[in-house]
Length: 343
Image (cartoon, rainbow, N blue to C red; front, side):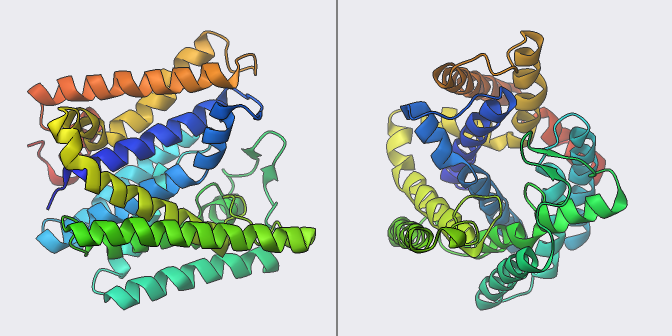
């Protein structure tokens, strides 16, 4: 099962991640202008949508019988290896976390829909309890957003499972929620409408509750916040709500985008998101570093324009690539190394 709207949603998530990552990489301070407000709203939300969509894709593969557990495990190993290599250059890498999410997904393959949601709730709760039991700031230099001891055994496990950028507890909850969504009839208009309305309701209610608790007692703000650091249950619920609404809306308007002849253009980069994820680091950030622009000298508007421009070029490249090839470069490499074939 493949819905073009899923690929478009993946591209939208990629666009959001590029906006956030380019601002972090260029060390631009947030201001009150419109680009800053947009990027602020995308922090943690774009990545959450990305992980949920990974869960959706995982569920599609399981339902079709094309992804036995051992193939998924080999793909997880591939992502883990290139993610760890990426960590040498880009310490906010998400790929090695994906490998861990896939392992969690394997464990829940035979779970019922209720089991998936209960599993997501349990993973979220474990992550939240850990915030109170352990030192969440261990390893972090929040002034520079650097994790100091990742390459130690203790630091690796702490970063991967508890207090890194996208730790298993609670981020794997997004993956399980994605698996649950992937079992729905996403092509049905009533399902799309429920995703939109339910997602908006969840995001608004949770965000309002979080804001109210923080205003009532400032000391509660950090443990009831909706920002991704630390990832509280309020963040998981708010991120899930925004992801559901975004996915439902994109699925709903995909026929309109097709009639405007832009659906395929927007879907193409979503089909090679692994390749483009690496490209935004090594080409996008690499060019900015070569130009000496990772020093905070750019404005938020400039970073916003560069990010959007990069994603438009990526979309054009992907569209042209798929005229000749069936898979993106890294996607083909993953298939070759894990299945022994490209086509």
